[in-house]
Each structure stands twice: as C-alpha cells, then as structure tokens.
Length: 102
Image (cartoon, helix red, strand yellow):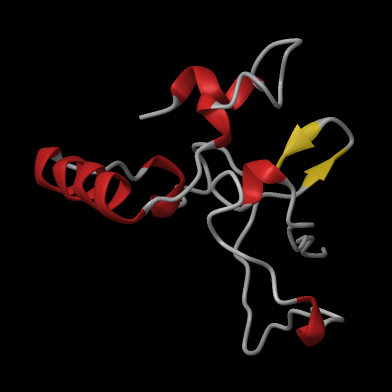
C-alpha cells in the first residue's frame, strides 16, 4: 500500500486566479506524513476484501443532515478551489467523481 500526494504548481487554478502569490524563495516545497495509518480495502484476484462479510463500519458511513449542513458551511466559507467546478481545466469534461459533488 502507498499514499500519493502532490503539491500544486501555482498555476492559475491553484492560486485563485493569481490572488494567492507563490513565494518561490521557499522552494523546494515538500510534504511529509507522520503517524499515517490507512484502513483500506485490498483487491486480489478481482475481488475486494471489503464486502458484507467484513462489515467494515467506515465503508458505509454517511453524514447525517446536520453533518451535511456543516460540510456545506465549511465549503462555502473556507474552500478556495473546487476542481469539480473548473470546466476551464477540464474542457473534455469533469472527472467521474464530480457527478457526486456536494
């Protein structure tokens, strides 16, 4: 298992149209992880380890109405960029997961 992440390259889409300036004197930019634990499904021979037999409670968790409203409030007040609304970056069409965008 591995984790993958990236650091934005300061393109227009990642800097609110240039409103957030990149301080290139701080380069190179790095990221690190400490005490990272992942509880995930494993695919083997075309089957997932996550099934009804395993009953992984996190696999079927959903936000209740209050949690959904809180998430919307955080997105409205703190989210800077939502790639699911960036048709300029994805002229060929938005990624599949954007169909479930809140």
